[in-house]
Structures are given as C-alpha cells and as structure tokens.
Image (cartoon, rainbow over all chains, first blue to last red; front, top):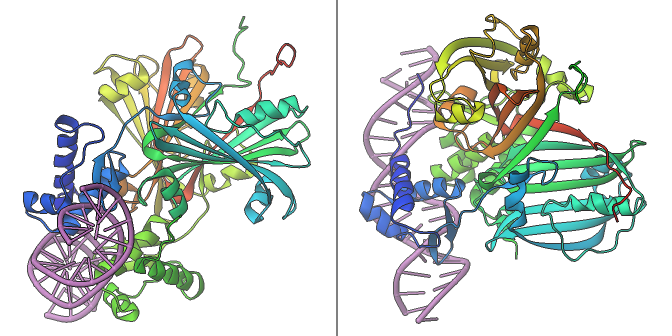
Length: 247
Length: 247
DNA sequence: GAGTGGTCTAGACCACGAG
DNA sequence: TCGTGGTCTAGACCACTCA
C-alpha cells in the first residue's frame, strides 16, 4: 500500500550518505556532478536531485562555481535557550552572535503581532548567530519605542534574542507571559541566503510575543532556524490537577 | 547581495497562485501540465517545478493519472489543543478522527524516548485525523503496558492524542509534566503518503513525553503535522522572577 | 485506449570561482 | 581560461485513472 520510493536519485542519495559517513570528512569536496553522472550512469538532473536531498538534510553545502562540500555538523540550536533542562542549551553557548539594531515602522504584520497601529515606531534588533562559521539562527526582536528605549547592545549571550527580556526588566518592564507560535515551512529566498541553506530545506519559524501584566505587548520576536539543526523544546507543568501535597 | 529569484518557474508559480486566488475554486482541476507548457512557452520540468512549489505551500494536490487540483483549504491544526487561548483550538474540533491501537515492542527510539528497556511491551494508539476528507495529522501515542492498560477507545475528541492523558488520570496515573520537542523537517515516504503531501512539503514533528511526579515516563507521543496547515502554540507564564538581588 | 502525471535522458547555455 | 554548479530544453518511456 505504501509506495516504497525506488527512484534512482534515492539510491544515489543513499550511496552518498554512506560515503559521507565513511570516507569523507567535514569540509571535503564531493566529486563533481559530472563525475557522479558517469559513476552512477545517470544524467545530471538525477544526480542533482540526489544532491538536493542531502542538502535539505543538512549533510552538504553547495557552492556555485566551487563544488559540493560535506557540511560541518554541530549540535542543535535549542529554543528556548533558558528554562530548559541544563544540557539542552549547551550548544547555544558555542555560537558567535552579532546584534545590530535600527528603528523601523511597523508594517501590517508587525502591527498585528504587537497589537499597535501601523507605522508605529519600533526598535528592531537583529540577532545573527554562527556556529563554526555557519549561520544557524536569525532572530528579529521588536520593541515599541513607547515601551522602552533600550541601549544598543553590542553582543549577546543568546542567539535567540531572549536576553531582551532581561533588558526590559532593567527598564522596569515586567513580562507576565510569553506565547510562542511555532511553524514549519520552506524558507523564502532571503532566509535561504542568510542561513546558507537550500531553498527546500525546512525551517522552524517561531513567533514569540511577550506581554506584561496588563496585557500590553512589550516585545515580539520573529525567529528562523534551519530545521535540520534546530529544535524547540517546551516544558509544560500540569497546572491545577490536584496532586497531593508537594513539598 | 541577496539574489532575487528570477527563475522561470518562480514566475509561473506566481501566475498560478494568482489564478488560483481569482478564477479557480477549491477542488477545481488545473490545466494539464502539457497545456501549461504551451501556455507559458516552457518545457515540462519547468512547469513541474512551479507546480511542486504550489504543492509544498499546500495550494494544490497532485494526483497521478488524474490531474492537479486546487486544494481544499481549512484553518490550521493547533498544537497543543487545550490550555490555549480559546479560539485557537476551534479548527481542531472540525475534524474526523479515527483511532486504532495495537501492542508493540519498544524499538531503540521508543526505548530512549520512554526510558524503558528495548523490547518493552507498549500499547500504541494511532490517531489519524481528517479535515474535509484531507488527512491533517498523524499521532502515535505510546503507553507502557506496565503503566496502564487503557481500554481501547474507538473515537476521540482530539486529533493530537492528548486525551490519553485524561484517560491515564482515570487509571490513577497523574501526569506532573509534559515536555514537547518540536522540529521542522521534510517527511519520509510513508508520512508523505499518509498525509497526502508532497515529498518536499515541510512537516512539523512533535515529540511529547509525559512524566509523573516520580519522573517516570507514562506516555510518549510522536506527532506529525503538515507544515502549511499546522502550528504549535505554547504559552509560558513567567514563573516567579524574583527581582531583588539581581542587578 | 486516451489522457494524465512520474521519472529520466542527453544535451545546451549561463553565472560563478579560482588560477 | 577552465571547471564548477544553476537553469532549461525537447524529447522519451512508464504507471495510473477513467471512460
């Protein structure tokens, strides 16, 4: 009933996966596509379909004019970084993080997200994190200028922009609740270029909205992570189910 | 610096998106690929690349031997279904849910997830939900037989398998915490076939592990949702941020 | 059997990167 | 310049669906 994929490019991809695991090392260049054609006795689109599969899995990186290379692998970026079970966030620390900021006006999407009028003035912080020279997350944090005017922060501990929440606290803004909306999709052209991933590599997209006790949105974040090296972990303690007296 | 995609199939996809939004209705058959070839003056692989884009976005469904059809669109399946802000879960209710169950032995992955020895006896509940005859979620819930032997439940309210948690409560098993691990990836062949999605449609995969107060894993769920019609929403109330002493 | 989509071929031309 | 990958062509053959 379930069709087993017996495509030719699936077999080639399987073979390449095996060779990458055994005879190649991270950073090595794969044989040229023309070589793979003759090696497997197929045409180039078939070879390229197999290579696209590996790219989507995060096993290789393709460079126009240079070749296809075995990708550096590292752990997974975990969202959220804090509040989690210790070891989870370890990988998040091993990244280089650059933060830039600018003032922008809310477009339709941001206005809806932050529950403000369109064209409202916002401060945008763009977090770009790299792990071993490979981009591994893009976070855009938006704070209405009316909420707080946070000093530009040159560096950060977290690639996910969640340190803004701590900064807000310093400005007297207390966050009461944070709601994260996680979706899976393919990246747009800009995201694929920024993260150095293929157009068919799934990404994990997170919309995070933080509100204070009055329900006012004080911060919103748009986060995009490569699917093959990211995960979002949420711990939900059971709230009001009557457990016996706990210490 | 950011390369603007000026591929031919991108323009064809844009045109088809516009036509779907204006002149086609849900369920309509698109022009045959050969027609689209002559219409746009391109070859078939180019047409098919454009159609693959639309399939990945959830706009069309492709049927071998029949044609390409405008997909029924419905709201998004929201995970988790309960504990959320009301309206979110509305769509989850409008689905047909079928549940089957069987006894299985833990493989390596399940053993690690449930923290039991391999080959441990488990009860597996498979939830398959449909919305307007379109599959929209697959959930596999695993409960160790040593934890509880739940009566087979023929139907369910929730497509996400979370009613098992309520059933466990009836058997005296109280869940203290639930940890969800969300990832984005492409589906394997079986998942794509089950969900009737393309091999390049991103899926949202959720691993959920529920533990009782003693830390024992009492339930684990593997959930797969089509990315274009799903979202995972988590509300995290700020616990007890003690302001004093931090500076 | 006619029409459809699924897969694959054997080329072609272009853009990019390094020598 | 030359080899690389990015894109596209104009076919071909097969499998599936429906009349």
